Image: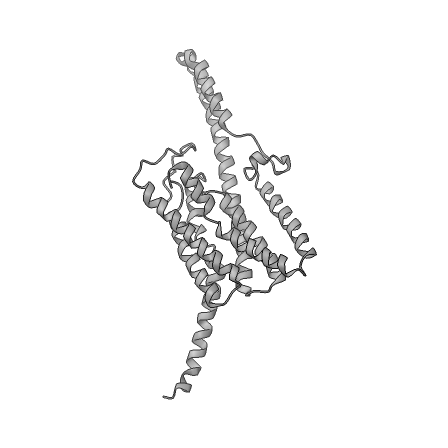
Length: 289
C-alpha cells in the first residue's frame, strides 16, 4: 500500500489525538480536586486543605482570561481557566460550610455539657469547673468575620461563602478595568500574562507552607498532589509542543518543581510522629489519603 493511502486513517487519528489533548487540558486541571472534595465531605474536616490554594488559582485564572483579550492563545487554555474558577468556588463553598458547621458543633457541645451537669445533682460540685472549660472551648471558636470588615488580619478567613464571592468579583472588576485601559500596551499585556502563569506556578506553595507549619501532611489528599504532578507535567509538555507563550512553559516547569517538593514532604514526614491536628475530632473523621 502506498504511503499516501494511509492518509485517510492518519488524519482522523491525529484529529482525535488533538481533541483528546484539548479535552485533557480543559478538564484535567479540576480532576486533582475531586478526591480532596470527597475527603472533605466524608470527614467533615477541611483543616488539611489550604484555602489559599483556591485564592492562588482564582487570581491566576482571572488574570489568564484577561491576558487572552490582549494576546489570543489557544481556546482550550481559556476554557480551562473558566472551568477552574467554577471548581475553586465550589471548593471554597464546601470548606466554608464545613468550618462554620464545626464551630457551631463546638458551641452546641459546650451547652450540652452544662445541661447534663444541671440534671445530675452529684455533678453540681464540678459544674463551675466544667462551665469554665466549656466557656474556654466556646471562646476558641473564631468570631464571625466579613469581607466588608476590611480587616487584613482575617483576610480569606471569612465566615460566609458570599464574602469570598464578593472579593473575587471585586478583584475581577478592578483588574478588568485596568486591563481595558492598558490593553494597547504590549508591555502591560506581556506582564499580565507572566503574572497569570507565575501566580499559578505558586499554586502548591500555600500547601507546602501549611505542611511545613504542621510538620505533617495529615488531612491533605496525596492523590490530589500526585494528580497535580502528573497534570502539571502534561500541561508543561503541551505548552512546549504547541509553542504557547514562553511564560507558560517556564512557569509550568516551576510548578512541577513545587509539586515534587510537596511529595518529598509526604516522604519525610512519614518518618516522624504526626502532629495532632488542631481541629475537633469527629466520629466519621479519617485520614485523607
